[in-house]
Amino acid sequence: MRRSMGSLVRFAVVGIISNVALYLAYVGVTLMGIGPKVAMTLCFVAGVLFSFVLNRNWSFKSTSPTSGAFLRYAIVYLVGYLLNLAGLLAFVDWWGFPHEIVQACMIAVVAVLMFVAQRTWVFRPRAGRLRAQSTHAMP
Image 1 (cartoon, rainbow, N blue to C red):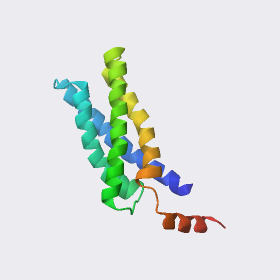
Image 2 (cartoon, rainbow, N blue to C red):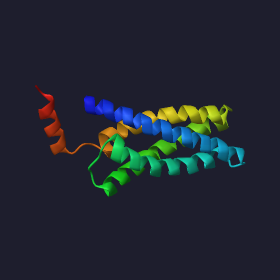
Image 3 (cartoon, helix red, strand yellow):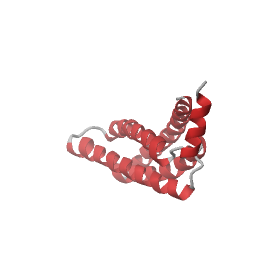
């Protein structure tokens, strides 16, 4: 439990820093005339690369091979991207909500998905490491 809480706090710090920076970049890019979906796509790709390094090495302290972890990370982020895109299409294009508000909300929704997927699948602890932790955790 303590390890999960530490991972959650570190994940939140990485998420806050990267999402604030990427949201500001998103607003800046859209102010330059680039459409919301293209701007979100550019920011999403930049965020995947940046956050993979920080989440792998700091948030989850993963020792799994980088190539396998990055493939799982890319899959999870592709799902998150599609969810984000669907949110923009539905709430902005169909229902007319302001894209700035929708994107801010989608960041929160996708963040929850990202943490659960990264903790349980992308950077899951190795079985041997899990056993060692569980034996140390018991009095």
